[in-house]
Length: 245
Image (cartoon, rainbow, N blue to C red; front, side):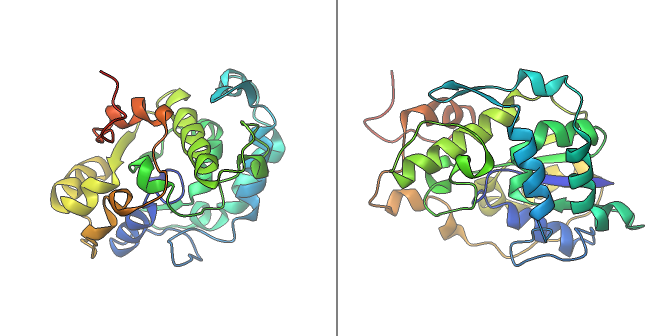
């Protein structure tokens, strides 16, 4: 079994990586405290190669259609295989990797590895944008988006871009979506779903319920109107006064 966890930074993907590692899945030769396979520079470069072919349509709309059929550049394939050298070479029965930046080039990762198991990790975007992450500024990755000096809005653009990028891609054969909140507040039921999907028993790890709903205690702006369709899709509550009847 080969597995990867995708989802924007600060979605809580480390919880899944730590779970897989504790369950005997080889997640790479060298991991950081977040459970990321490092060093990540080759995957970062692959994400920038991917972005060269993304067309910004203005606002929060992008065109990825070319990327689903065009030949994948050799330099992208080489960079990804260099980054994944240790899990690809491993003889472990169960292996994989986790790095949030994988999400930035997910459509080509999926085309390179159509048969592996994908876990798409979702978290309430209002919580997801509270802290800074390396993917906050899409321009760092070569992706155009509306210019802004508002840090929260910049993170929100990053969130919606990555959400739409994943949703726009054709579904691979093996795919599951997991909410971070369900993992924290109902770990047994969530792990039962994942165990059935992965075909292996999973170890329970400590979780902190206070990590859910931090946005409700936040005093800054953490909701943007363009979050609404995704929040409704995943059952998140729209803040009072912002719901459209």
